[in-house]
Each structure stands twice: as C-alpha cells, then as structure tokens.
Length: 402
Image (cartoon, rainbow, N blue to C red; front, side):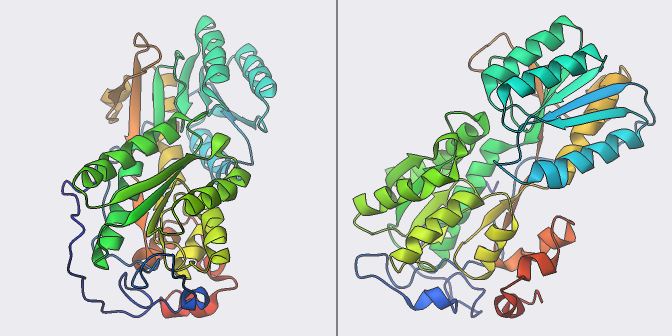
C-alpha cells in the first residue's frame, strides 16, 4: 500500500487516452446515459492509473523443502461463494502437495456445516498429519479445530481465519491491505478526474460470517475516514451484503442510492459479484459508466466490466501464490521443521475473540487491476484473453487485449 494518501486534488490530471484514461470520455455503450440527479458528467468509471496503489505485503522466499511423507486433509467450503475453489484451489493444492510426495485428500463441504464436520472427522480418523480448512463460518471451523487438536493434528486456516478457534497457522492474503487497496484506488481514480468532494457508497461483504470481510472494511475505512474528516469526501451510506449473498446486493444498493438522492460518485463494492449487482442498478438509473466502482477477485465478469468501462478496478489475489504458500507450510509441518527456518516469514495474528489463541499468519500481497494492466491476470495464468474478451472483442481491441 502506498504510504501517502491521495488528497482529491482540485485540478484534473490531463487525460492522454480515450477509453483507457481515468478522466476520459467513456466510449462504452452505457456511457451516453446520464441523470440530472446523479454524479457530475465528468465522472467516468473507466480508470487506467499509471501508478496504482501497491500492497505492503511481501511474497515468501522461494524454498525447496524436498519430499515428505504423510497425509494432508484439505476441506474447502463451497462452490457458490466463489468459483475459485473448484477451478483453482483444489487443483493447485493437489499438484503442490502430491509433487512433494504427500497424499492429499481434498474435499468440498458444499456449504453444509454438518458435512464439513463429518469430512473433518473422517480425515482425522484416517490419520492426516495436517488439516487445512477454509471454513463455512468461524464457529463450525473452531469446532473442527478443537477435535483436530485433541487428536494431535496440526491445523492451517486457509484463506479465512477462524476467530475463537485453535489453529496454529493461517495462510491468506493481507486482507486489511486489500481494503486499503480498494479504497485508495477509488480515491485515486476520482482524484485523477479532478472530482471534488465525491459522494461514496460502501457495499461491504459478509461481515456477519467472514472475518476477511471485516478486515476489508477496516482497511477501507483507514483510507476513507481521514479524508471524510478533512471534508474531502463523504460516505453517504454503508450497507452489508449479509452472508456474501449477492442476491441481497442489488436491493441494498438500490435503497442506498435512493437515500442518497441518486447522487453518487464512487461505490466501494467488496467484490466483483457485488460490483456487478451495483452496476445493474446503475444501468437502470442511467448511471452505468459514470460512477467509479471497485471490486475484488478478478473473475471474468469483473474484468469484463473493467474492460467495458463500467467498473474501475478489481483486486487480483493470485490463488496460485496462496495455494503454493499453504502447501509449503503443510510440507514444513509434516517434516517437523520450523516454518520460519524454512524461509517463511510468519507474523503474529491477534484473535479478538480469544486473546489466548496464538496463531502465526503468512499474509500475501494482492494486486490492483485497472484498464491499464488487465493483461497481468492473463500473464499470471489465471484467465486467458479469450475468456476475458468473449463477447466484448471491440472493447478489448481498444485496450490492446485482442
């Protein structure tokens, strides 16, 4: 994360591009629509920052730990909150663990907490040495961790930490930093257009079920609150999309937009799915392409919305880095090695629900994606240009992606 916070300068940065510049006229088909009650016509969702905010987290050093023997159990939460678990996490973890000689049992609980507990019990009974879990919620995850501890099984919280639990390790992205990246990029995109005193609506993720969402929110407020106190922006509304259930996002945003009198310059949406729901409401109100909107996850839909100028940014969390880091940690634990001595930089992670819970965290950097660097997702192997550009070849061509 950049150490300096943008000040929403009063002078607009000169635009040097057509579709790709933050302060440019958006050529997306929706950009011709406007509303007298909406934001200033100069606001464009299309954003291409030459120097976007960067994460303050660091990648772990590449270390070859060699082969290991034993069994690792991995339980993923569902296939509905994100497609990543099936498309990326499972195959990446399978490859990394089996490549080290470890037997990997990777299962998905399909959103069922009872199934999650049953899978864990079976894995513990089958003698896994390490259990890696991405829980459906913290209480059920903590219950599994308690059973694992009683059996002498080491536990890694994967992607989401279980507050009140007993896992010794946690691997994820620096989620507070992710919130900072979203907020700072939103501020920077508006600042580059010379937008004064913007109205911001915040659409938080499932803070009721996911500590990551709590951290995203905290990080965003660390950037936005000081600016609001200085009178440089106004958070006109903040809503929670409970349980990350995207079906709740459009009604919540519609209500927030109505309460704001239709006047909004930027929306801090917690992820791309929420952003897409927000964009749907903006379209109905003739505002799509005229409001800066954040996102997270860098999925096809989110990236397409960026390419077509309806979404300003997304956060790319390279699951490959997360899976490799978690696998490396599991390998080190099976080998009986101290992770810190195996080249991993672990930090203390405080559990506000259980201060006695001593957990070591391996937190990874995420990357801001705007129109300027969509191709970085392709270079990382997360998606292909064909996948991103399907149905939007003209817009991709203007960005040099086709």
